[in-house]
Amino acid sequence: EVQLEESGGNMVKPGGSLRLSCAASGFTFSNYSMAWVRQAPGKGLDWISSISRNSNYIFYADSVGGRFTISRDNAKNSLYLHMNSLSAEDTAVYYCARVPYGHPDYWGQGTLVTVSS
Amino acid sequence: QSVLTQPPSVSAAPGQKVTISCSGSRSTIGDNYVSWYQQLPGTAPKLLIYDNNKRPSGIPDRFSGSKSGTSATLGISGLQTGDEADYYCEAWDSTLSAGVFGGGTKVTVL
Image (cartoon, rainbow over the protein chains, first blue to last red):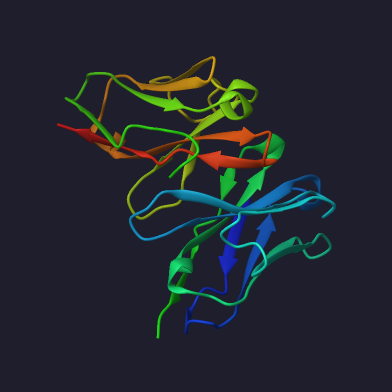
């Protein structure tokens, strides 16, 4: 059974940093691209970053480029999102998703990031 | 402002059919497959339709998808109260080399 479990969400002050993790199981992690998709309160889904199987190709949305860094450790079946210079606009539930052929098929349950003073 | 355009809401009585449109461009829907997701309140999105019209195992055939040109449509027939949720379309954007979502459509069962 494919499982994705995010962790690391928390409340942080503006300007702060946070690292999210996503533990994958039930499939060969190294065979799939992965993505982070966030959802601000009451808003829609927003694809913010993705990484290819071997980390050769990385995408960042304009809203997070230069502040967020996506990475993966295929030996540990884990995906990460390092977030710096956080602002209130980054408050959201962050989902990790498995992305075969460009379309998410499995999603984690999400982890909440709240940026507030 | 989402890259893909969906109506904010649709509604129908139990047993009826609703359709949700998703409009994009050549670089999104025009050149790539479309997926659809259901998000029940307080839960993660769930894949309903992939490759325009295919259903993953376990998804009932009340859910259907189609694509024509730069638009796609999700159909839900035999509407049930349990279908009340937000529905999102998604497509690969060949210009961005990343996925993009529609703004979501809330389905209400009257």
